[in-house]
Image (cartoon, one colour):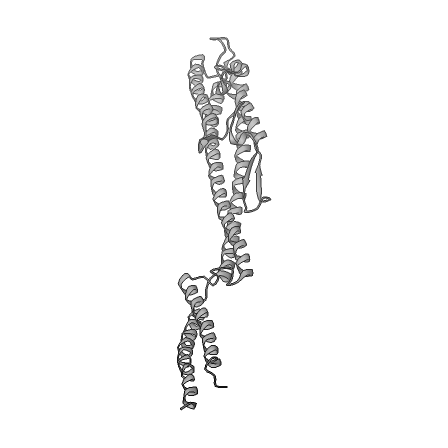
Length: 304
């Protein structure tokens, strides 16, 4: 039907151009941002899934940082205990030498001086080793070190993903054994005063007890060395576990990021083809709209 008021062909061409323009705009947006989903209108379900995956990935990235920091903290404590072992081995050597009958009182006095010096440094290491300003091995009431109590590590992106490390009992035993082997290390307590200054030397000049003191100290030092090794072993095992946690988190994170990319990222080859198609449709639609607009002149020709 020919009509001046309604041109169905023009309306159809305009509608087609509008749809094509919308599709062309979407393709250009995707190509400019690199994302297939730029708003919930693009893919509501896909956006929900991708957002959940992004949150999980972000949480795992932070958990990976947590594990690295935790491993560093444990390595700091373990390194301090390694040096403590070296000191205790030297102290045991001194006690063994002092226990020998060939050592004189003067010899034992000199050995005791070195022993006391090593004792002071041992106390410094145990009480002052810290990580980020927090002491790690101190067992003093009111100023407990990190590993003198239970430590909880966040190793995942959810509430349940935690790891508990409890070496507090071993640390307490370590302090007790060090106190028995080197009383001055935790000076100021009654027990320390009972041992201070006479671990491998005579309690009084020439009283003949130096060898006995030294001999009794050997086993105490051996026990202290074993206690240090126990704590080191526990920390090493926990650090190894955290290392495996890190590797697993890295694997999960990579796969989760890939899954998110498959949902969110645009396929440039496909989208470029779609944009070219829509550009051609726009050109064709515009040409047809021009032709449909000329149909009104056909009505006027009937009146001539």
